[in-house]
Amino acid sequence: MSEPSHPRGILAFGGLAAILASTCCLGPLVLVMLGFSGAWIGNLTALEPYRPIFIATALTMLFFAYRRIFRPVACKPGDVCAIPQVKTTYRIVFWIVVALVLLALVYPYILPLFY
Image 1 (tube, rainbow, N blue to C red):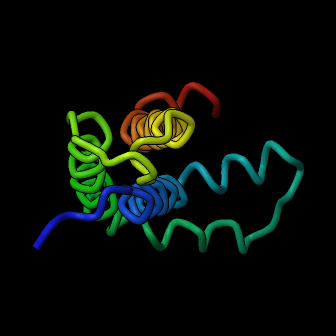
Image 2: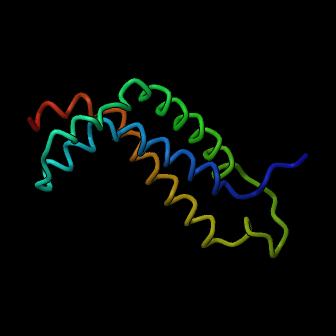
């Protein structure tokens, strides 16, 4: 069975995992910086125990997306993988998701600097 030539689903899943990994503590900080307040913001930390799972999922999906985006593939003319704009778009989205995952990895260490 051949692999699909587009990594759209893997990138979307990796981005979602990166966002979920950073919601437990970064979400309340952003809400407080925007002027929202209340005791309900403390409930947003309920996802903290799942943070390592989300980060591991995001890193795994990024690995598979990297393999599909950056490996040389022989494409037939007219295939989606043969269009340069599609390749460029996938690479840009890939690096945006990498930035989100890096943010999820480092924010616990830089977050105390803002309080």
